[in-house]
Image 1 (cartoon, rainbow, N blue to C red):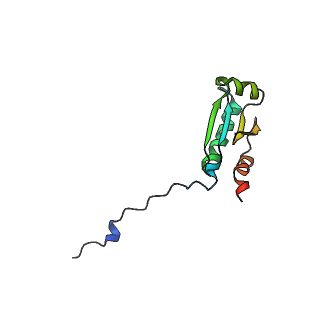
Image 2: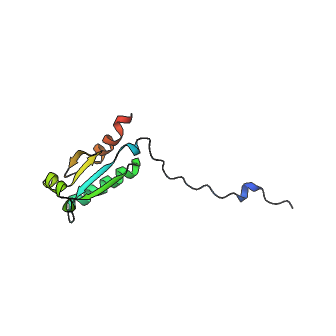
Image 3: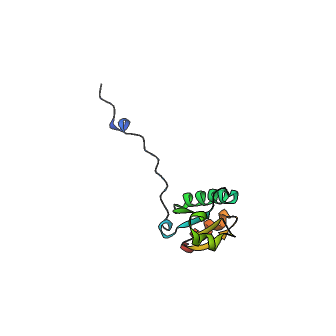
Length: 106
């Protein structure tokens, strides 16, 4: 009896991770927050979700560890910056953030 076809010996295809979109490396989202802030926690969930979907990097900054950020944004936190420019504060709208990160490339 002949051996099994090589076709049956192949490893199953591994699912491919989502490829970052062409604009992902052109943006950076910054979430400025403070510890114990429930609005900051909510904002982070939205930022994490949208950035993961679009392959856009994001960073978090603690307002209590940076005097300049504290002085500039204390009344507004959480604050979301896109490419260093203020996008929104207090509440982050998922669709608006997604639009800010994708529209200029359509």
